Image (cartoon, rainbow, N blue to C red):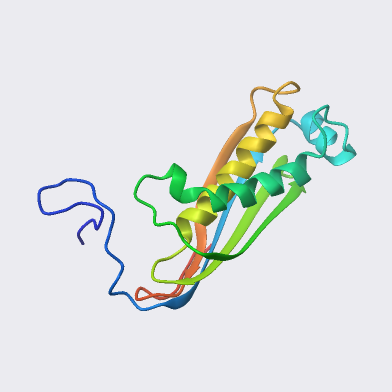
Length: 158
């Protein structure tokens, strides 16, 4: 398998997708922010000093997906047709689980947009709670599902 973001001389370049078919595409990414139970209690009680942690992180994730091509040098700007970001508290972690779904109809996939949405939401959770706990861990960021395009469907098998 060859890496598509390098030319014959090994130089980075943006992939030419002009000959690819326009298809419906979707990607789902996931991740988490692990924290102490006492920190999670602030999220659940809505008592974080900066405000509604989950609501603000949800908006940040949506904004992150929309800005993906400005942040990742070789990403194509895409006409995103849907972004949803879900954040759930999980006492078993303990922490917040994050999932982002991004859709488009285009010539390239939206995996990077979904990953950027999850990452931005996770960073926002951290930012909003860092005064309470600096040792939070962001992790597990991965593509859980990708569908559409020439390569077809990919789904994480647990």
